[in-house]
Length: 310
Image (cartoon, rainbow, N blue to C red):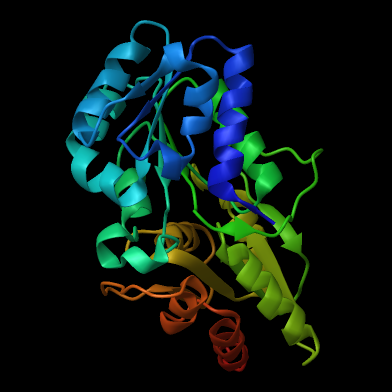
């Protein structure tokens, strides 16, 4: 297991060796976001902008018009709440080539509490035209998604966690824009998850097998655009969908999946996420369980849901 923030910083520094147009900006938290790894190796292309997120994003917008590929870094909650105007009106409205790395997403900055937890970032970013959104769940996927972000000519939001995550993919796996991946097959129901909670979904699904409940698990790493074809395929084949996300149930992955199903192939669905409340500080795993995102809650939800006849 390796912390996603470490993988991100190392990958960015490595890519900076190959591509001299990459520049990195941080809002005085580079030791946390691990953009400091890039800064230590490429000092002439690293800018600490101080605690001024909107100015950092504005500078990145300007750098992108000069042919640079800026990666901007701070905690996801500050990126959205302090940088929203610039993200919308300077970067996305002009479709500029800026990569926005939201670190410590969800509740992964666990002990700092509600002010540092991010459960509205997907909802905001999803609503802005021209934005591509990725959410990562392991080391190899993080490496490949950062590379993919550079290939995209336009705004990209990378939802990054502080947490260490088990390895799910090998080095040969490829990740396409607008696609998800089935990481476990099943016939009775599909869990569609993203980020750290993909691993919780897998834990629950494997234990449910012992009770003769066959659960498919999908890693929806591309939040926008989303894999409509895969969502409909799962709905047709397993008849029920549960979404699981470390984000508000309002406007996140569950909302996006439900929008697809309503238009394409309606089936019974449950959305598991943070239920319109501010979170609190504490141990990360305890918070995951407290807010109904842990393995046992997922298992119990599925056991009840699977009994419902359409």
